Length: 323
Image (tube, rainbow, N blue to C red; front, side, top):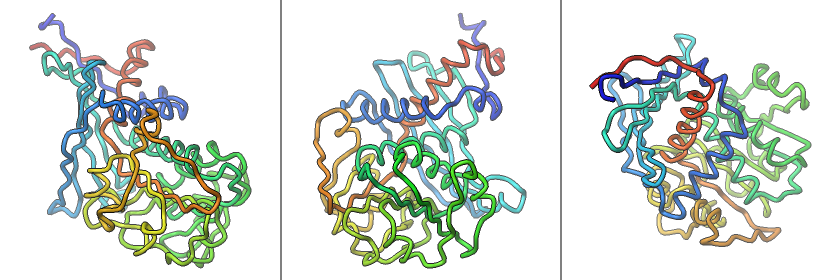
């Protein structure tokens, strides 16, 4: 009833108590499949630079058959580091599609991290050589750590992890997160690290190419995480022309992802692969690339999972929201 309506608030700690890697992986797979079968819609992305030096964006969409409607407002504020905070900030909001009234507001930082890592895990499971032994990670931040953990889940065959840091020096904090597995090795030479790796993951702010195209060996798979805005890139010129390319969304990748630098190249959508609408068979010498720009459906499906889990467990704070 209108006057008894409630709005559920899920803060950082509530999300942490509900979210698991398995939930995120299921949500990512579900989101891509909904996209591939055209059961989920993605609305145009808002992505704008701010006078404060930050970048603000909105990703939204709906899943009519499941009564899901919502958006994620998110962006990147580099000055947060000086405050001891995370530069990536996100908030997810779910609505009742019948009335437009809000159902749930939730902290979106962990959601963004988990759903992006889960997408990367799917990419590795479906596109990388399953006997891959060596990983090269570009980046040491929150998403780089999440992608590394996802790679270890997706590819149990991994025996060596090399990482390239922004400052060009070892990162003890990054290494400590994987102490139970073994110590990742800092790589001072990016091209040498790429040449020695079966899998490469780029999870940086995307300021420019991170390595040379000539360093990539036949058979390498690359997950690209950092290019999610016009003008950003992590891959070198000419590499995409040598690769077989899978994207999360063709329109979005061509304007925000690595594909903005190589428009016109053929690609396949991950959702089409998962839905059985396209096929992909890796040949041993193929160079493969998964261009990950991040879809609203990933946020909304995972947000809906968390909303239902919170209702089941009595998590979060319900506040009166009459109308």
